[in-house]
Length: 280
Length: 216
Image 1 (cartoon, each protein chain N blue to C red):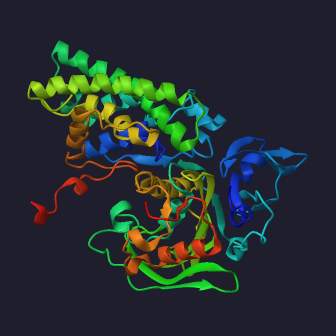
Image 2: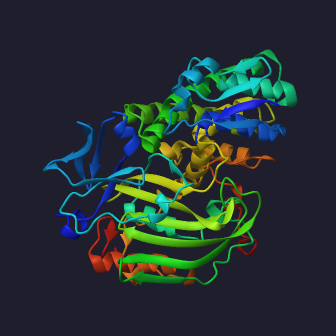
Image 3: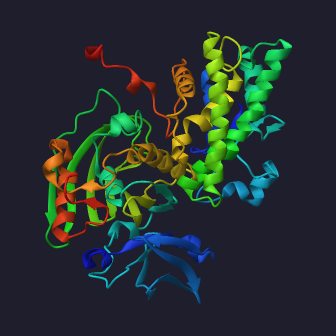
């Protein structure tokens, strides 16, 4: 039995442009078969119990397998004029959907997994940053994150100290805001939308809203796919496969503040699909 | 400059990027939106390569669409020693491995596209064919080791090694483990240790395998 707290959330299930172009996507959500298709001009998601509540946002189709506890979270920056919206495309990963989100929130792995791009030795220190659970929106936020990056984005022309903010607005979605190399006064927005196929398998849809008027679309997509595929082989080898919510098995460090807040937030809200509750 | 139409996650494109890096050749890389855009199947791309495949290598009026031909071209231009020994037996063996690399792409490569980018197909068959090819490679490399060799043909790395390396090194992406193939693993490590080696997502740099100084 899947808890109602899990069923009543929104999950990404398709890239909207592909469904609008007439593609039909036969897939899974929380272990159940679903179909995403265009019917009479509207996107319809059908599961075993019939059609589901659907919404279209940030280039993707979102569905709720239960009764929505709240509307889908907003990303106001996505609507700002001048931003380029980039659908990066789906990548399947054999890992817990929660692990995919947690990895996106981690900074400490940059020099070792994204070597010479998002980090480089010896610049491995994660400076102190702040984490909170915002009461108004019930979201996890990490702010004042800084990290030295040799190539922070496709548009970066050298190493910079990048400012970051991270945000978890839904159990399987995370959004980051980072220094835009082309416009130092603005922040690029990058999201990771994770579709939980099962507790140990997910489809991941990276998405970006950037200020970059020059880089060809194919290069922007290639850059973000390169980054995410560097993570994939790590994600598929994490043990245990499920995300542990019992603090007994691990000793977190200062750098893991965001991860700890995310895990506590999941536990408090009963969002345990893809989680391990008792250390094995 | 030689231009490579490239996709960052393609094992075949990586063959060419790796070969060029090892030879010290700089390529002009043009990213093609293979996924999710399927730009390699577009009408414009068909003018360049009617087969709709990547990579494509263009040098003046020469257009190459087969990665093994590109390896030959780059090696002939910038490092003929990479063509392997020229005696009849060795030259034929290099050709044998270049063709064999196509079998790796059709098995391990397809399993990877299935598991990673959701390609439709018979995943069990692709993995079984991948294991069959890996068993052949393991047997050949074990024979080479018994004879004191490291590389597929001759005493130095050649285009045969580069052609076969990429889909083998990425086999985990398609759910095929190299645990049962120790000679293959040692050979992939030898390639990763080459001067000027470049990685791609899914193939990590060798430094993580080196023991920490205090651990020696």
